[in-house]
View 1 (cartoon, helix red, strand yellow):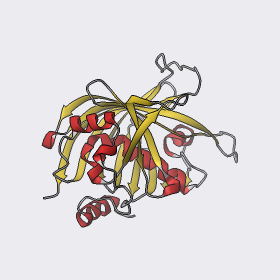
View 2 (view 1 turned 90 degrees about the vertical axis):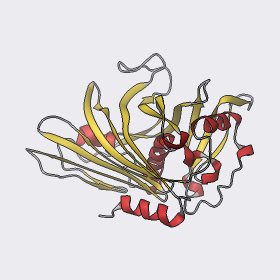
View 3 (view 1 turned 60 degrees about the horizontal axis):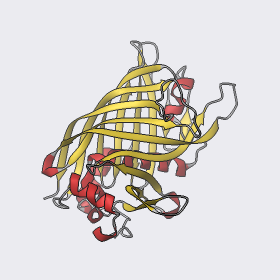
Length: 307
């Protein structure tokens, strides 16, 4: 199997932290929306030194199906060139669920398997291929297999979204000098007026595979919310039946900002959930229909900079 972690680090060394194939990203500071300028001045006041990588760990709880929460731990590596995230969900005392999310130079990969006293590792899933021979199939399907229709573009977008969600830990990579993302004003649908506290951030390797999210900032200039859409996979328990898909809105909420090296401020707590279209509110949701399925604390952040 490809060692994506080493690939990311080697790319960071070779390119000096610049994102490959992103020379079109030459946005200037003056072109940033005012709320983005305020945010970056708050969390990453200086463009230098150039950030090479961040290694970090997470611990928290995830809901793989309605009404149940399981502990998980994960470790990640993020660079300008992508993300490698590996974790373990503790299903019960008998077995665990292992997963890996990868985004390297625009290509997404997803791998998962289970292990335990009663079962050996029996799940293969990489990039856009998913094969399940496990009793956990109906439980882990949606957690693992978005884009199960073997559409590489879907997997690339899903894993690109994961990079965006964790990029708040590396705000230096969100500055225009890094050349990794672009920002533009968020506008109302009715009259096209620019919204003062939100902006759209876009990460893209290829023009037809753009990954974007809408960021919201509080009065202190900190990012508190990222909103994005993706297809949710609904498995059909009947043998031989293909799953159905629904476009869903997802939110990632950030809190507990703390200062890190070189004056960076990053959120150490994150909560993620789905917001159903319309006014539906589930039993695990709050008043606006937010259905929480993931919450985590970031620990042991280790930054490495280029000289």
